[in-house]
Length: 150
Image 1 (cartoon, rainbow, N blue to C red):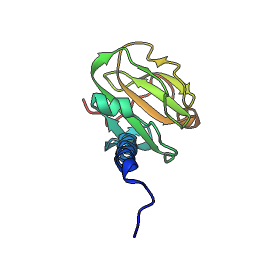
Image 2: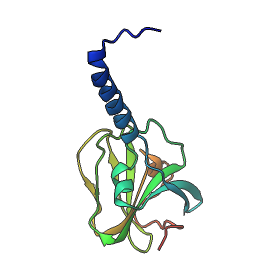
Image 3: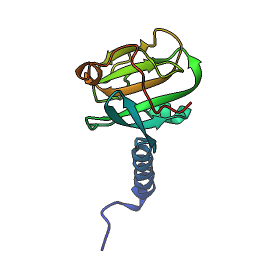
């Protein structure tokens, strides 16, 4: 079979295909382990973002998430944590959680926004769920989250 690309354009075409493949693999989700978390009677399957690369990736580029699925961001110690929604397609709510597993505050976040949402005091964890999940389950600041790694 004869190719329709002149010999001159073949290296350029090959380079373009390699760049496209690289860009596609860069947007593939980082792999996360899953932790079962409990908030009262509610069981959550939370993907754990424990490394800087995992925390940076977070829930970016996801188009859906199950009703009791979420992502928990794990930090080495209590610190000031702020979250944003750059390249995140889903509306989310985030609970900021202290070292004892107590929810400090909860914030709703809009998709694809760079607005910062911060813990009201130093926290060790942040749990993202579909927007409104905490409100629907009547989960408020002061509630304990069980199953967090210590």
